[in-house]
Image 1 (cartoon, rainbow, N blue to C red):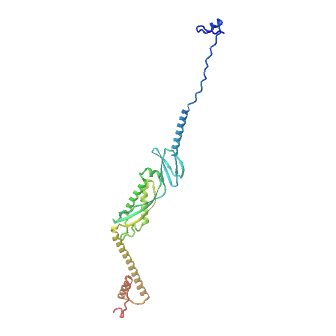
Image 2: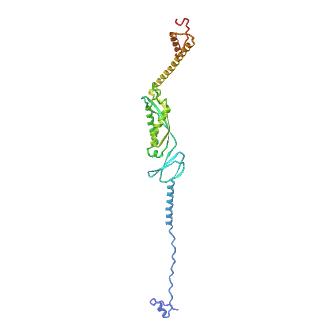
Image 3: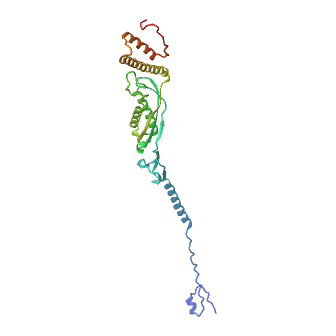
Amino acid sequence: MRVYEEARLSASEARAKGLTVQDPVPPVRAEPRPIPPDRTALYGVGAVVGLVVAILGFVFFFGFFTLQPNEARVLILFGAYRGTVRASGFFWTNPFMSKKRISLRSRNLNGDMLKVNDKRGNPIEIAAVVVWRVEDTAQAMFDVDNYEEYVRVQSESAVRHLASEYAYDPADGEGAEITLRSNTDEVSAALAKELQARLQKAGVVVEEARLTHLAYAPEIAGAMLRRQQAEAVIAARQKIVHGAVSMVEMALQDLSAKQVVQLDEERKASMVSNLLVVLCGEAEAQPVINTGTLYH
């Protein structure tokens, strides 16, 4: 079998002439291979999602807080007051809120010793202790700059004012006067009342206020001690004389009522003199035996 190979004759002309034409082999078409997905993009998306979840979880973690008994948290969101949590336990709130801790427990303020002048101008030393606690957390946080420092300063000011309102000791003839040394309960009540009026602005409640130290200043302590000793001696002498006079009067009345002896005025005066010397003298009386009469 001959194969017509001339390029100028077409396949139909070759068949017409009786030539055998070999059909060309059709080209083999390759099947397209599937393109695998781009896993790098998927990994990138997963990483972004995981990072976002981690950040959100980290942010939400700051919303948890705990409170012990007699503690409070003041909640502030972007400068606005949102309330106060007072109950003890475990809580969660908006993590963007600022949570300020305030203790509601009672506290002691042991004031420093102050040197001031009393009502009469005498220099004295005075100190006080104040028991206080926070009642209104919003006032304590926002109405004053530092409520603890505010309590300290106002307490010192109140003690100074109190000392100038009362005398240290009562003056002569003024026994009913309220003084710092003699009327401690009244003075403490006045101090607590004045402190409460001063600290109410800071949301603080004064539970108790008392003087812990009270004395004359060293420069006049010696003179005032001698004055107190003299007043004590005078008071004791007055008591002794009053008792001696009462005893002499009782003796004369008994002698006259029972008619033990008849005494004229001169004898009564002599008896009164002798009894007062015996009763009011500091040393023991020495008996004197009279061998004559009452007039010799």
